[in-house]
Length: 280
Ligand code: PAF
Image (tube, rainbow, N blue to C red; front, side, top):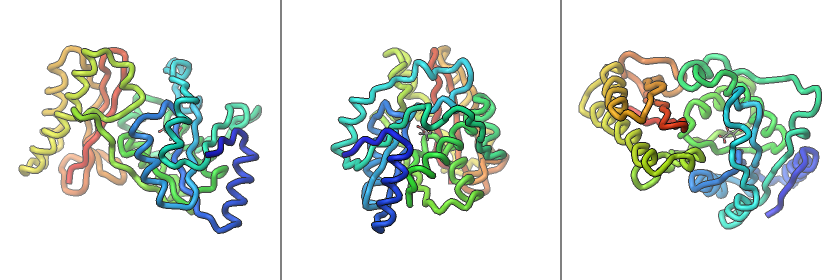
Protein backbone atom coordinates (compact mmCIF):
# COMPACT_ATOMS: atom_id res chain seq x y z
CA UNK A 1 0.00 0.00 0.00
CA UNK A 2 1.36 3.40 -0.99
CA UNK A 3 0.55 6.75 0.56
CA UNK A 4 0.57 9.63 -1.92
CA UNK A 5 0.43 13.12 -0.47
CA UNK A 6 0.58 15.50 -3.39
CA UNK A 7 -1.91 16.25 -6.14
CA UNK A 8 0.79 16.10 -8.82
CA UNK A 9 2.07 12.65 -7.72
CA UNK A 10 -1.44 11.22 -7.51
CA UNK A 11 -2.40 12.62 -10.88
CA UNK A 12 0.80 11.28 -12.50
CA UNK A 13 0.27 7.83 -10.94
CA UNK A 14 -3.34 7.69 -12.15
CA UNK A 15 -2.19 8.70 -15.63
CA UNK A 16 0.46 5.96 -15.59
CA UNK A 17 -2.04 3.31 -14.43
CA UNK A 18 -4.49 4.29 -17.15
CA UNK A 19 -1.75 4.17 -19.80
CA UNK A 20 -1.00 0.61 -18.66
CA UNK A 21 -4.68 -0.24 -19.20
CA UNK A 22 -5.43 -0.62 -15.47
CA UNK A 23 -8.90 0.08 -14.07
CA UNK A 24 -9.06 2.30 -10.99
CA UNK A 25 -11.72 2.08 -8.28
CA UNK A 26 -12.07 4.86 -5.74
CA UNK A 27 -13.55 5.45 -2.29
CA UNK A 28 -13.30 9.06 -1.08
CA UNK A 29 -13.35 9.50 2.71
CA UNK A 30 -12.62 12.07 5.37
CA UNK A 31 -10.75 9.47 7.44
CA UNK A 32 -11.67 8.36 10.97
CA UNK A 33 -12.47 5.09 9.25
CA UNK A 34 -14.99 2.61 10.62
CA UNK A 35 -16.55 -0.63 9.39
CA UNK A 36 -18.90 1.33 7.09
CA UNK A 37 -15.94 2.77 5.16
CA UNK A 38 -14.14 -0.57 5.10
CA UNK A 39 -17.13 -2.26 3.55
CA UNK A 40 -17.22 0.40 0.79
CA UNK A 41 -13.56 -0.48 0.16
CA UNK A 42 -14.27 -4.23 0.11
CA UNK A 43 -16.98 -3.58 -2.48
CA UNK A 44 -14.70 -1.34 -4.55
CA UNK A 45 -11.74 -3.73 -4.49
CA UNK A 46 -12.95 -6.36 -7.00
CA UNK A 47 -14.39 -3.72 -9.35
CA UNK A 48 -10.97 -2.70 -10.69
CA UNK A 49 -7.24 -3.50 -10.77
CA UNK A 50 -6.19 -0.76 -8.38
CA UNK A 51 -8.11 0.53 -5.35
CA UNK A 52 -7.46 4.14 -4.37
CA UNK A 53 -8.99 5.73 -1.30
CA UNK A 54 -8.64 9.35 -0.27
CA UNK A 55 -8.45 10.81 3.21
CA UNK A 56 -9.15 14.53 3.29
CA UNK A 57 -11.21 16.51 5.78
CA UNK A 58 -12.79 18.93 3.35
CA UNK A 59 -13.22 22.41 4.86
CA UNK A 60 -15.53 23.45 2.02
CA UNK A 61 -18.35 21.15 3.18
CA UNK A 62 -18.41 22.31 6.81
CA UNK A 63 -20.75 25.22 7.26
CA UNK A 64 -19.42 28.09 9.45
CA UNK A 65 -19.51 27.27 13.15
CA UNK A 66 -19.76 23.52 12.57
CA UNK A 67 -17.39 20.80 13.69
CA UNK A 68 -14.50 21.10 11.15
CA UNK A 69 -11.80 21.60 13.82
CA UNK A 70 -13.31 18.93 16.06
CA UNK A 71 -13.52 16.34 13.26
CA UNK A 72 -11.30 13.45 14.46
CA UNK A 73 -8.02 13.11 12.53
CA UNK A 74 -6.78 9.52 13.02
CA UNK A 75 -4.42 9.08 10.08
CA UNK A 76 -2.15 6.32 11.46
CA UNK A 77 -5.07 4.18 12.68
CA UNK A 78 -6.78 4.74 9.32
CA UNK A 79 -3.75 3.44 7.43
CA UNK A 80 -3.66 0.32 9.60
CA UNK A 81 -7.30 -0.37 8.73
CA UNK A 82 -6.79 0.15 4.98
CA UNK A 83 -3.99 -2.34 4.45
CA UNK A 84 -5.94 -5.54 5.34
CA UNK A 85 -8.86 -4.68 3.03
CA UNK A 86 -6.50 -4.42 0.07
CA UNK A 87 -6.23 -0.68 -0.51
CA UNK A 88 -3.43 -0.07 -3.02
CA UNK A 89 -3.08 3.71 -2.74
CA UNK A 90 -4.10 6.15 0.00
CA UNK A 91 -4.29 9.67 -1.38
CA UNK A 92 -4.01 12.14 1.49
CA UNK A 93 -3.53 15.67 0.18
CA UNK A 94 -3.04 18.76 2.33
CA UNK A 95 -5.50 21.62 2.13
CA UNK A 96 -3.08 24.10 0.51
CA UNK A 97 -2.44 21.67 -2.34
CA UNK A 98 -6.12 20.94 -3.03
CA UNK A 99 -7.27 24.54 -2.50
CA UNK A 100 -4.25 26.72 -3.37
CA UNK A 101 -4.38 30.46 -2.98
CA UNK A 102 -6.76 32.00 -5.48
CA UNK A 103 -9.05 28.96 -5.60
CA UNK A 104 -12.56 30.21 -6.38
CA UNK A 105 -14.46 27.67 -8.47
CA UNK A 106 -17.29 25.61 -6.99
CA UNK A 107 -19.80 23.11 -8.32
CA UNK A 108 -23.45 23.43 -7.42
CA UNK A 109 -25.97 20.66 -8.11
CA UNK A 110 -28.98 22.89 -7.72
CA UNK A 111 -32.23 21.02 -7.18
CA UNK A 112 -31.01 17.79 -5.59
CA UNK A 113 -29.04 19.80 -3.02
CA UNK A 114 -32.21 21.52 -1.84
CA UNK A 115 -34.40 20.23 1.00
CA UNK A 116 -33.52 17.52 3.53
CA UNK A 117 -29.99 18.18 4.84
CA UNK A 118 -29.54 20.95 2.26
CA UNK A 119 -31.97 23.13 4.22
CA UNK A 120 -30.03 22.74 7.46
CA UNK A 121 -26.46 22.70 6.15
CA UNK A 122 -26.18 25.65 3.73
CA UNK A 123 -23.33 25.20 1.28
CA UNK A 124 -22.62 21.65 2.39
CA UNK A 125 -23.44 19.90 -0.87
CA UNK A 126 -21.64 22.55 -2.89
CA UNK A 127 -18.55 21.71 -0.85
CA UNK A 128 -19.07 17.98 -1.34
CA UNK A 129 -19.65 18.24 -5.11
CA UNK A 130 -16.63 20.50 -5.54
CA UNK A 131 -14.19 18.28 -3.65
CA UNK A 132 -15.51 15.09 -5.22
CA UNK A 133 -15.15 16.52 -8.73
CA UNK A 134 -11.60 17.61 -7.91
CA UNK A 135 -10.77 14.18 -6.48
CA UNK A 136 -12.26 12.50 -9.56
CA UNK A 137 -10.07 14.68 -11.80
CA UNK A 138 -6.94 13.82 -9.82
CA UNK A 139 -7.55 10.09 -9.12
CA UNK A 140 -9.19 9.47 -12.54
CA UNK A 141 -11.26 6.49 -11.38
CA UNK A 142 -13.36 4.25 -13.63
CA UNK A 143 -15.69 3.48 -10.73
CA UNK A 144 -16.37 5.11 -7.34
CA UNK A 145 -18.30 3.74 -4.37
CA UNK A 146 -20.42 5.87 -2.00
CA UNK A 147 -22.55 4.86 1.00
CA UNK A 148 -26.35 5.05 0.86
CA UNK A 149 -26.41 6.37 4.43
CA UNK A 150 -25.59 9.81 3.01
CA UNK A 151 -28.34 9.34 0.46
CA UNK A 152 -28.68 12.97 -0.60
CA UNK A 153 -24.93 13.12 -1.13
CA UNK A 154 -25.12 10.02 -3.34
CA UNK A 155 -27.91 11.64 -5.41
CA UNK A 156 -25.90 14.87 -5.72
CA UNK A 157 -22.85 12.94 -6.98
CA UNK A 158 -24.92 10.88 -9.42
CA UNK A 159 -26.54 14.04 -10.81
CA UNK A 160 -23.18 15.80 -11.13
CA UNK A 161 -21.65 12.82 -12.96
CA UNK A 162 -24.59 12.75 -15.36
CA UNK A 163 -24.81 16.51 -15.90
CA UNK A 164 -21.08 16.97 -16.45
CA UNK A 165 -20.67 13.82 -18.60
CA UNK A 166 -18.07 12.29 -16.30
CA UNK A 167 -17.10 8.83 -17.49
CA UNK A 168 -17.27 7.28 -14.02
CA UNK A 169 -19.58 4.56 -12.74
CA UNK A 170 -21.10 5.46 -9.36
CA UNK A 171 -21.94 2.52 -7.12
CA UNK A 172 -24.20 3.02 -4.09
CA UNK A 173 -23.47 0.78 -1.12
CA UNK A 174 -26.19 -0.21 1.39
CA UNK A 175 -25.88 1.35 4.83
CA UNK A 176 -23.80 -0.69 7.25
CA UNK A 177 -25.47 -0.97 10.66
CA UNK A 178 -24.59 -1.84 14.23
CA UNK A 179 -26.37 -4.94 15.63
CA UNK A 180 -29.18 -2.72 17.05
CA UNK A 181 -29.70 -1.06 13.67
CA UNK A 182 -27.87 2.25 14.20
CA UNK A 183 -26.24 3.32 10.93
CA UNK A 184 -22.45 3.39 11.26
CA UNK A 185 -21.09 6.92 11.31
CA UNK A 186 -18.03 8.74 12.62
CA UNK A 187 -20.47 10.81 14.66
CA UNK A 188 -21.67 7.85 16.73
CA UNK A 189 -18.56 8.14 18.88
CA UNK A 190 -19.81 11.51 20.19
CA UNK A 191 -22.90 9.88 21.76
CA UNK A 192 -22.94 9.23 25.52
CA UNK A 193 -23.93 5.66 26.50
CA UNK A 194 -27.47 6.88 27.23
CA UNK A 195 -27.69 8.75 23.90
CA UNK A 196 -26.26 5.75 22.09
CA UNK A 197 -29.14 3.57 23.36
CA UNK A 198 -31.69 6.14 22.18
CA UNK A 199 -30.02 6.38 18.76
CA UNK A 200 -31.27 2.86 17.94
CA UNK A 201 -34.80 4.34 17.80
CA UNK A 202 -34.05 5.96 14.43
CA UNK A 203 -33.85 2.69 12.55
CA UNK A 204 -36.59 1.13 14.69
CA UNK A 205 -39.09 3.79 13.54
CA UNK A 206 -37.86 3.68 9.95
CA UNK A 207 -38.52 -0.05 9.98
CA UNK A 208 -41.97 0.50 11.47
CA UNK A 209 -42.73 2.92 8.64
CA UNK A 210 -41.58 0.30 6.15
CA UNK A 211 -43.81 -2.30 7.80
CA UNK A 212 -46.81 0.07 7.47
CA UNK A 213 -45.87 0.73 3.84
CA UNK A 214 -45.60 -3.00 3.19
CA UNK A 215 -49.12 -3.38 4.62
CA UNK A 216 -50.38 -0.92 2.01
CA UNK A 217 -50.13 2.59 3.51
CA UNK A 218 -49.27 4.97 0.64
CA UNK A 219 -49.93 8.38 2.24
CA UNK A 220 -46.56 10.02 2.92
CA UNK A 221 -48.02 12.22 5.64
CA UNK A 222 -49.24 9.20 7.65
CA UNK A 223 -45.85 7.52 7.46
CA UNK A 224 -43.79 10.59 8.32
CA UNK A 225 -46.13 11.54 11.19
CA UNK A 226 -45.77 8.07 12.68
CA UNK A 227 -41.96 8.35 12.69
CA UNK A 228 -41.88 12.01 13.75
CA UNK A 229 -44.28 11.48 16.67
CA UNK A 230 -42.57 8.29 17.73
CA UNK A 231 -39.15 9.96 17.88
CA UNK A 232 -40.53 13.11 19.51
CA UNK A 233 -41.75 11.01 22.45
CA UNK A 234 -38.11 10.72 23.52
CA UNK A 235 -37.24 14.02 25.23
CA UNK A 236 -33.55 13.73 24.31
CA UNK A 237 -34.27 13.46 20.58
CA UNK A 238 -34.96 16.60 18.61
CA UNK A 239 -36.22 15.91 15.10
CA UNK A 240 -34.83 18.12 12.32
CA UNK A 241 -36.81 16.51 9.51
CA UNK A 242 -38.57 13.33 8.45
CA UNK A 243 -39.43 13.32 4.77
CA UNK A 244 -40.44 11.00 1.96
CA UNK A 245 -38.91 11.71 -1.44
CA UNK A 246 -38.74 10.32 -4.94
CA UNK A 247 -35.73 8.03 -4.85
CA UNK A 248 -34.00 9.55 -7.89
CA UNK A 249 -34.95 13.23 -7.97
CA UNK A 250 -35.48 13.68 -4.20
CA UNK A 251 -38.64 15.67 -4.96
CA UNK A 252 -41.18 15.46 -2.07
CA UNK A 253 -43.94 12.87 -2.49
CA UNK A 254 -47.50 13.01 -1.13
CA UNK A 255 -48.40 9.55 -2.39
CA UNK A 256 -45.95 6.69 -2.62
CA UNK A 257 -46.67 5.66 -6.17
CA UNK A 258 -43.03 5.17 -7.23
CA UNK A 259 -39.74 4.10 -5.62
CA UNK A 260 -39.24 6.34 -2.61
CA UNK A 261 -36.83 7.01 0.21
CA UNK A 262 -37.81 8.06 3.71
CA UNK A 263 -35.00 10.19 5.14
CA UNK A 264 -34.57 11.75 8.56
CA UNK A 265 -32.18 13.86 10.60
CA UNK A 266 -32.25 14.29 14.35
CA UNK A 267 -30.14 15.74 17.12
CA UNK A 268 -29.48 13.59 20.15
CA UNK A 269 -27.77 15.85 22.64
CA UNK A 270 -25.14 17.68 20.58
CA UNK A 271 -24.84 15.00 17.93
CA UNK A 272 -26.62 15.21 14.58
CA UNK A 273 -27.53 11.85 13.05
CA UNK A 274 -29.09 10.97 9.70
CA UNK A 275 -30.61 7.77 8.35
CA UNK A 276 -32.98 6.57 5.65
CA UNK A 277 -34.88 3.58 4.35
CA UNK A 278 -36.13 2.64 0.88
CA UNK A 279 -39.88 2.24 0.43
CA UNK A 280 -41.01 0.37 -2.66
O1 PAF B 1 -18.92 11.20 2.72
C1 PAF B 1 -17.84 11.77 3.00
O2 PAF B 1 -17.03 11.29 3.80
C2 PAF B 1 -17.50 13.07 2.32
O3 PAF B 1 -18.62 13.86 2.14
C3 PAF B 1 -16.72 12.90 1.00
C4 PAF B 1 -17.54 12.18 -0.05
C5 PAF B 1 -15.44 12.12 1.25
C6 PAF B 1 -16.34 14.27 0.42
O4 PAF B 1 -15.53 14.98 1.30
